[in-house]
Image 1 (cartoon, rainbow, N blue to C red):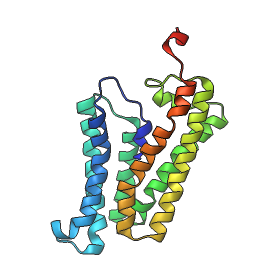
Image 2: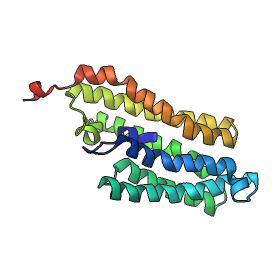
Image 3: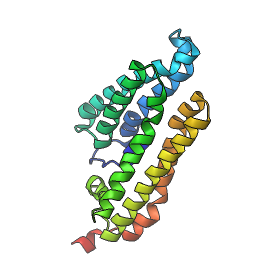
Image 4: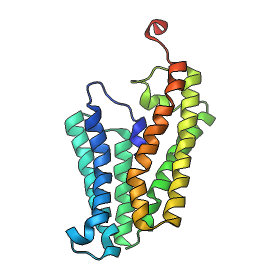
Amino acid sequence: MSQDTVETQKPGVNPLLKLALEFGPLALFFFANSYGDRLFGVAQDRRIFVATGIFMVASLVALALSRVLMGYLPRMAIVNAVVVSVFGGLTIALDDAFFIKVKPTIVNTLFGCVLLGGLYFGRSLLALVLESVLQLDEAGWRKLTLRWGLFFFVLAGLNEIVWRTQTQDFWVAFKVWGVMPLTMAFALAQTPLILKHEIKPKAAE
């Protein structure tokens, strides 16, 4: 996620700053895994553990910077920092990269279940985090919530396929350079739906 693509954005927040805070920890994770043997003198098969430790610290630092620079804590960033800390801690404590690899699967499945579960009970939960930046009619919120819910399941499935069938380095690269562009492309692809169901200011008045 990057999952923060669907996070509400307060007025006056610089989009580049928000992107840097979201993407920074992932970029550090990638570079530590790619060059950890040269930078930290660890064996190649130990790079993932160094990278995981850096990822944990960077996620918490990004969360603190979000509070200081943007004046609030993004919901998705809080969830991500907690999950990274838990699964990263398990990865290091048990010396098993399995936990950091399944983290995206569990998080994306959780988000998908929450969104689709809300629809099942008649609530478009996506509106709770996006209503300050989007004004859609009820049908629009239902459709957008359904699409994002299904997309999170697709991301979970892709993560499972990649980490189980590809090398560890390929999985890290996919996590950093594959998931973010996919998420941004999917978000942009929802523009026609948003325009179709957008409530114009005049109509709202």
